[in-house]
Length: 114
Length: 111
Image (cartoon, rainbow over all chains, first blue to last red; front, side, top):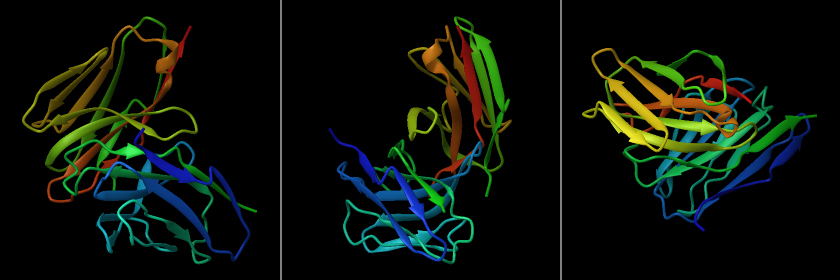
């Protein structure tokens, strides 16, 4: 079955450490997105990519980095510059860059700073 | 940037009743989408309504869109315990090529 796989499901980060969240899709979707969700809140856009080897900053990109070397993969690195990284991270994809189709979401990664 | 705002923030009803959630947005859009999120899970796409449509149905879901008022509503009829979740509206501001999500409505269906 086609879908989006996020890993790991839970991740613990020590202060000052970089961590990378994985997002893989086998839907042949062009566009991929990373959102952050804080408890009881909506989703805020971190980064998005509409084509391989290209990506744009979202509303809260500071302290995060991404790459899009393959169509299927859009990993997110949470760097030590992100001062409050504890949150639920959601990856999504859609057919093309127009936002005219529904997004498919992964099951999320819950990141906790210890 | 916050585009959609849901109302109410939380809604609790009895099983079998209808649930109505509202969404308001600020700028012109190409389409508006509704999503469901069960606790601790990813979002699931429910329905998309385009700016030239006024109403759309999918099973027990009915969505309306009023572009003159920049608002939409999601009606879930004959609610079930399994409908307990958070519901989000999302819009694509024209030319933005990305979805912006609201804060969500937490719906609780009591047995």
